[in-house]
Every structure is written in C-alpha cells, then in structure tokens.
Amino acid sequence: MALYLLFESASGYSLFHGYGLDEIGQNTEAVRNSILDLTRFGKVVKLVAFHPFSSALDALNQCNAVSEGLMTDELRNFLEMNLPKVKEGKKTKFSLGVAEPKVGSHIFEVTKIPCQSNEFVLELLRGVRLHFDRFIKDLKPSDLEKAQLGLGHSYSRAKVKFNVNRVDNMVIQAIFLLDTLDKDINSFSMRVREWYSWHFPELVKIINDNYLYARVAKFVENKSDLAEGHIPGLADIVGDEDKAKEIVEAAKASMGQDLSPIDLINVQQFAQRVINLSEYRKKLYEYLVTKMNDIAPNLASLIGEVVGARLISHAGSLSNLAKCPSSTLQILGAEKALFRALKTRGNTPKYGLIFHSSFIGRASARNKGRIARYLANKCSIASRIDCFSEVNTSVFGQKLREQVEERLDFYDKGVAPRKNVDVMKVAIESVLSEVSQEDDDGQQNGEISEKKSKKKKKSKGENVAAEPMEEDRPPEVAADEHASIEPETDKKKKRKKKKQDQEDEVVLSEVNAHDTEQNGTPKKKKKSRADLDNDGDVQTGTEGKKKKKKKVKAQDD
Image (tube, rainbow, N blue to C red; front, side, top):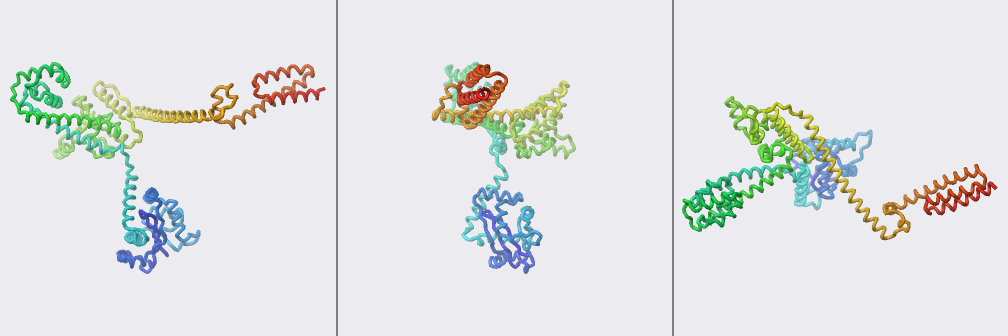
C-alpha cells in the first residue's frame, strides 16, 4: 500500500510520497537512521506537490483550522487534486499520513481518504521537516525561518485573544509601585524633618502632615527672612491663617541654629523631590482607580480599588482570583499565620487582605469572623463576574455591597436581609435594561444619520428637477414622491382606475332606474363633486366618463 505524507509548514501545504517503505518493514529505527542522511532519505520520500499560502492571514487561518482539527476547503482541493481518486465500494490502495489525528479523522469523514498517524509517520514527517528547504526549489532557509516566526507570533496572539483594556498586569505593577512609593515617601519625609529641624525645630509640632511639611520647608527656606508679609503664602499652603501666624511667631523665637546657604539649597532640593514624589503618588492612585474600574468594576465597587488590586496582585491575576474559592480568598495574605496555626494546632486566622476593608472595621468583635466570611463570599462572586462577563458594568458590585450592608444591619439590629436570588434578579434586569438602552441609542443615532443623508439626497434632487405640481402640495408629500417616484405613480394610476369603475357602476344603475330626462342633472352633479374631490387632477378620467354617459343615453333613446 502506497503511503502519502501531508506536511503543514509555515509557507504552505506539501504532499510527499514514500517509496520502498514496505521493504523497510515500517521499522522506526531504520527510519531514524536514514533521516539524518539526505541522500538515503531522499530515495525513500519524494515531493509530489506543494501549495503555498497566499498571505500571512491565510497562513494564520489554515494554522488555526489545523490546530482545531478541521480541514479547510483549500486543503481539501489540494488533496483531491494530487491524490488518487477514491472509488466507492472499492478498497483504496493508498493511505495518507498526518501529524494530527483529529485532522486525519475529519479528512476521512469528508473525503473517505484513509489516514494514519503513528510513530512511523511522525518519524517520516520529522525527516521532512528537517530537509524541507532542500525539497522545495527556490526556498531559502532564512525565508522559511521568517515565515515560521511571523506565523508563530500571529498564532500566539490569536490564541491569547489579547485585550489591551483588560490587562490585569498593569494593576499588579501599579499597586506594587504604590506600596513602594508609600514607604519611600515616609522615609524621605522623616529625613526632611530631621534635616530641617536643625534649622527650625518648632515647625515639626505645628505641622504633622509630611507633604505639607515639605511644602512649608520649601517655602520658608531661611527662618530669619520670614515676616508677616509671608502669612498669605503660608495660609495658601497650610489652609489655615491661624497656623500661618503661629509659624511666623515660632520663627521669630526659634531655638534652631543657622545653616549655610549651600546647606539650605540641599534641603530645599530634597524637599522638592519629596513634593514631586507625593504628587506622583496621587496621580498613580487615580490611574489605579481608573484601571480597576475597567478591569474589575464589580470588585472595586464592592471592596474598594486598593484592596481589590491587592487581592489581584496576591493571587497573580484576575483569572487566578476568580478560580479561588471564598475560603481561600478569605485568608489570602495570611498564609504564614495559617500554617503556623496548623503547625501549633492553634486557631486559624479569620481574615487576610480583606481586613483592610471598612466592613470588618465596622463590625463588632464577635462578628468580625462572620462578616469576613460573608465578604469573602461576595468578593469571590464579584471576581468571577468581572473575569468571565463580556459586559463591563458595576451593577453587580453595587448590589453585592448592599447585601453586605444589610448583613451588618442584621448582626447589629436583627433586620432580615434580602435573599441572594432576589438581589441577583434585580441586578440582571438592570444590566439588561442598560444594554437595551445602549442598543436603542445606537439605532437612533444610525437612523438620524440615515435621515440626514436622505434629506441631503432629496434636496439635491429638488434642485436638479422640480415638478410643477409640488408647489400646491405640502413639502412632505413632494419629498416622498422624490424618494420613490415609480412605485407611487403606479399606485395612483390603479387608484384612479378603481374610482372610475366605481363611478361608472353608480351611473349605470341610476340610468336603468330613472328616465333619461331625470338622469341628466344628478349625473352632472356627481361629475362636479368628483371633479371637486379630484381638484382637476383627473381631467382625462372625467372626459372618459362623459363619453360613456353619452353612449348610455343614446342606447336608452
């Protein structure tokens, strides 16, 4: 039985035919020995056909199909053109060797081509991969490497489905940097206090905040130059005029020593660095809040942006946090205490990072463990919604926060909270209503743009050729006629014919009932009424009626 080999490369599909494989006896060891030598391997395996990919996008689509175990139309056409035809009811005299068993099963289902995938076929394909650039003419090894590299990158990006707006790594780095900045700002602020206290020791007791102390030290510089004229500037920094006056009075009776101008310059520069770091810390916190609202809005609205970011960073990613059960999330960050308690057979910790939440601080001492367990349960739900939901909304987080508030009231006052099922139903309804409103707004915007484009087209048509009858009609009718002229003219003609037939039937019935002399006046009256209703638009119809009426009168006479 002949054996064909299907090899999928980064540059295209290739089909090889194996010769003399029966003599080898399908011995994998013999194949392994002949792989390294191209002269020996070239006698066994020869190229039958090669089909290059048209573009990088086509290569990516083909690669995705092969990885999913599917046969594309392009691959099917390639196989049917280059393989012997399979006759129904007869045994095939060849088989196709493939690397992916799923692809082989799909090829057999569609084309009835027998496929096999075993160690022997894989060894042959390994040799084909090793000497592939030798089999294809005008194919350089560098070109093949570039094609493999580009296809590898595009395939990896497609599999990962990279979304720039939902990268939790940015949150992890931001919260680490925020903690580092807090430590650095505190240590630098203490250094500024100690350094400047040699010159102005009384300022430490007046101003407690580190950021304000650095700004005041930068503003004052030399305490001997401080006077009452500096009170407005100090009041702007401190925010209190009384404190500004107190600083000026303390500077007059200060016990600190004088510093040289060079020392004062160094102190001012270091104070400026501390101010810059504090301002950057505020900007970084705002950035963290916005990223958390984009990545995990429900978790942020439930437990806060900083605590939620700490949970994500400690778990490693949002998906890892979503996989954690609520019992693990409850003690996340207290692993040392947990293992120490297990080792010493003591009490296990009740909470980890979620202790920084305001809910646990508001609970009483005997209810802290209960509220921590309940809060961990809700955080687990919120993280899973944020990780796997396609709709970016914070409605679920708000409803979960309301549930935690109700649980606190239940522990303190005994007020029964709502059931989780009812709360989730309300949240789902609100989310669906928001989505429908967004869809309606998008449709309205699209309709408005369509109407504007139609109005522009109508105005252009009116300027080119305007009908004289539109002057007597309202502008809406004229515009509608411009929008669809042909169908409306056909409808009008049909309506006119129907009206004429009805009026003719009425006239004939009246002629048969009355004499010829009495028939004249009502006919004329009816004609005049019809003429008034039609406003002269159906003059041709009335002339036809008069002729018909004259014929009827002649027949009666």
